[in-house]
Image (cartoon, rainbow, N blue to C red):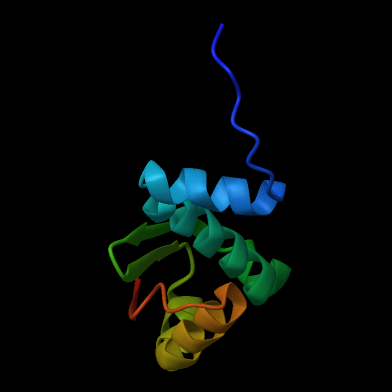
Length: 98
C-alpha cells in the first residue's frame, strides 16, 4: 500500500495548488465573474440579464432591455473596474453589451 505524504496545509492552499496544477483558473474566473455581476448589479439589472459570459478577458452580457443596454454602455469602464475590484484581480478588460 502506498504511503501518504505528511504534507500539512490548509484546505484553501491545497485547493489553490490543485487549481493551478490542473489549469482550472479560467473556468473558476468565469464562475466568479458571473457571481460578481449578479451581486454588483442587483435585482433590477439581473431581471433583464439573459446571459453573462466571459471569453478571454472580454465579458459578454446579453440583456433583454435596449434601454438598459444603452444606459449601461455609458458606464462600461466603471463596470470593468467594479468587477475587477470585487474579484481582487484583473480578469476583464472589456465589456460587450448585447
